[in-house]
Image (cartoon, rainbow, N blue to C red; front, top):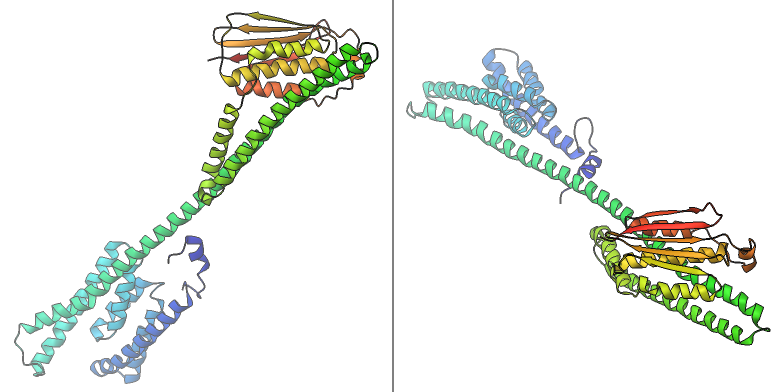
Length: 438
């Protein structure tokens, strides 16, 4: 099992320059064995050099103890091992020092130079020692054995630790590279998850805005007409029963239409929740990228499949306002043709909301609805004259949330169109919109 870079950094618990306590214990044990070895070999060195034995032992112990700093200063350890090679001591320190040097982040030319010096020193010392043994008669082999023993001994003490150190160093660097890549991948996944959450939150906000806009258009217009007809019904209930019955029927029709449209919208929402629930069972990494996109596509498909208003229903819409007592004049310019569903729905909603605002703020005012079919766009304008009675809107008790114009502007802007609204010079109000039709 491998660790990431952060986990590896937290795992550093050793003293001084050691990463772990067991590494310190290992180096301490190797230094102790090396000191004992060099101290024992220092006895013969003291006799050959003609110095007190205690001096030879102390020299060997101090030199062998250098192995304790092999991780901190590997070059120094190898140099000390090469320096004491003529005294025929420090074989363990030389082997371990070369291994440590080859496995560290040291330039290859330095490793090669020190390994060559160690090889040459060991070869010379072995050559001299074997030749002395042959001269004393300790060995009865031929002269060919001297160079053979020197070469094999020096290669045996130098090549294996260097090759093993190079392999361990390469493997360590590979593991560090994999840790870095794992850290980078983890950071990227975290960033992707954050971005996916932001996109999902944005999508939820957009969906809430769209639902609120649809609810406002459906409820505000239908209920406003229902309030107007209810007020008229109350006024003529005793004087003209037939007209009262007619107004009551209109109120019922509008209520049923509002309920039908609300039912269609709720059906789309339930279908979207089912798709989002199925997408929630996907893996965590794919939630941000796939779930939000799948939910958005599903909502779009369901919304597209639901029957929405179109421009052909404008006559019916204006007829409802006319039945409520508003004088509405419709004029159509250009060649009538069909458009994409979202364009026709947006154009219908703009006219619908504009008429609703007239009912709320200028009840009884004459209104002009103009629709222009152009080559690459469709334009619409709803303009009302000043109301005959300034207090008529307040008398009808129609509340206003101030979101109608905002919703119309958002709808038109979403299709790349232009929306303008404001009062006219005569005291009325004008709403204009142009939507690209390509």
